[in-house]
Length: 175
Image (cartoon, rainbow, N blue to C red; front, side, top):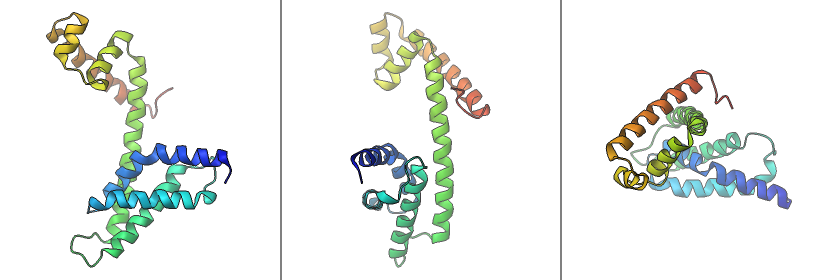
């Protein structure tokens, strides 16, 4: 594997970690198995790197490996009481993939809508939800009453919700 392919693989693995973790978490009853299985999946992704074709859907490849690893672990634990039938796990995997896809669409729509906000609105959203500042602290920093900040954030959230729903109804981000 050349350096460029190695670099691409590392980027793809890192990019899909949160989604893989969520996917694996949906498949396993025992949450203590999630980290171990995810580590195994990452090792397999690295070992089978030569099989991945750059330009194809990395997520599809990685999620299949995670699915098979989860099924193998479930079969291994089959003698224990709280184990799902493999058919149920397959159905759960399908549902998890659908939900993750929907979440990705909503996140993309949110990003699109956030980018459409006026700079002052975006600043308020960032101060509150990215930086995690209390409304009172924001009000003090901006020199406006806390009630005014609450009302403005309420209106911005409403506008974002409308924008997101509109983007999803149009079938994309329109970007």
